[in-house]
Amino acid sequence: MSQLIDNPVGAQVLEADGIRIGFGERQVLNDIYLRVQTGQLVGLLGRNGSGKSVLLQTIFGARAVADASVRVNGRRVVPAFRHPGLLNYLPQEPLLPPSLSLVQAADMLGVDLVKATAGFPELRPQLGRRLGELSGGSGRLVQALLLLHQPTAFSLFDEPFSGVMPVHVEALAEEMQHVKHRKGLLITDHRYAEVLPICDVVYLLHQGRLLRLDGDVREQLRDYGYLAT
Ligand SMILES: Nc1ncnc2c1ncn2[C@@H]1O[C@H](COP(=O)(O)OP(=O)(O)OP(=O)(O)O)[C@@H](O)[C@H]1O
Image 1 (cartoon, protein in one colour):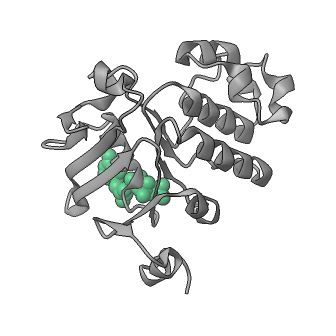
Image 2 (image 1 turned 180 degrees about the horizontal axis):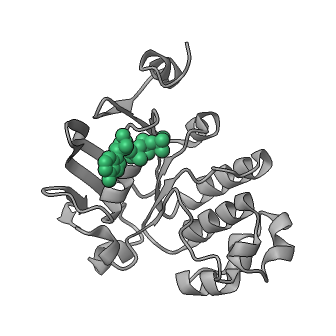
């Protein structure tokens, strides 16, 4: 596996296949197929409760699902988080403990803190702090930047822009576009206006099915009731 992950020339392809998840009577995910390739930024949209977080948790391996197939270059990687250097995941809730200093967090993840935050001068005076001492939006931004810059082949982000102020949302989106040249990114966020322009591929989770949108994406998002008509 590490040979595949370390291969700098060939693209790596992460596939989730045959994902089916139900809670009680309700089938949330119904035979989902999703593909992310290194060098791509893939957007995952869907209405509240459509199953985006459940899908990311399943791909990462945090949610055990019988028969779920997650593959990298055709090789099964379940649970994916056990494969060193393969992928990281920013959940909707804070990932890192508030008592951790930014320096400790960066060290733990193998990230150069100064480099990862270089595009955000407002963060510079805060780099000596603990995560819990940052504002909610700054904390979210720092965690997203750390995972973005961690040397993994793929990153999964569940609402990375949540609580982040507009000027930093734009800068973070730009940073993602740079970083995607060395990894594959899968992002779900309701800030669709910022997400759509940076995506190479857009998926919509709709009534348990994952639809890959081509052509006029906004029109389709309106047709499926994700955007107002
Ligand atoms: N452990 C659980 N038990 C029962 N139902 C669950 C459980 N976890 C998730 N669900 C349900 O699965 C559905 C999908 O939840 P999920 O959090 O993935 O939605 P989402 O698309 O990420 O929504 P949002 O945009 O609001 O974040 C929801 O209806 C939720 O209530």
